[in-house]
Image (cartoon, rainbow, N blue to C red):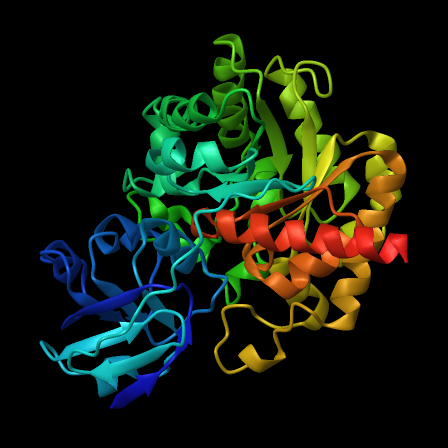
Length: 411
């Protein structure tokens, strides 16, 4: 019997007793294997949630950072139930289906989706999005690089705000040690290092997080490169971690600038790189994440300034284009990655990159959607950066899409 339904975020199945989380003490007391039920999950909970048998939330969307990281941990996760904390009872045994979003009473035998072990080798490169250094060595043999290395989790797991780590003289060291595991595992395949993109509400619970402002909608607030430009020492610490790894001989690292709103922010980022002793396009490849319509429609300015690659962040691009909070449950039905307006902008960027012979890459949630990936391959996308558990599946899907192009051309 289905007790309640939410939005499934991964293909995993979980069975266990319900444990409701209201305080940090509740998280600390987790033994492992419980089905955690919480109103809203935040990044600072991840070090505890990785040992859960499953996670269910009232609020949140499929593109939330917590949902993405739990997928990498292999933890079933269902978001957006609206009332799980009210409906589900403490210590009740349930089965959760991370694919359908269904939560069943008692133990139900469900079979997880199994991926074929056959490895396809399409011309389009199949990369991976990574949040967790520890899994890099396991996925590196199957991926053609890292399309988005998200360093935020390396900071969150310390329990300290980046400014606190900076004040302690530890920020660059933490990042250097975490990123080294990934560039080493993937060497000589490229790794796109994305600088911080942490909304303010996800930093507040960390030690020193009380410096963050209160924002009604943090996803449209102080985040991405704009936040780091306002605190250049934080940005410099990130670039120094990259420089440390370059000095160690890891030439496969590149820098990606996230959530840009205009060319002035990119110019400021390049200026800070140079201050840290990095020479863009010479010592290191630099690129941008295209996540806002303003970047799409001023893209020629970025081409003139100089970029070596781009990645497409379709979740934020959709949010900004359709005026829909991507974490908002009540407006979730308006959040359409395949909306014609969004897809037109994506096609425009891919075509311009092909003309300029710049690598274009789709990363994030959209890179795990077969229909979207197939269309982007037909448009000439250079690489697909998907979740770790989707690499083999995407290799097969992309190979099929390329064969469709060959057949169409022959006809």
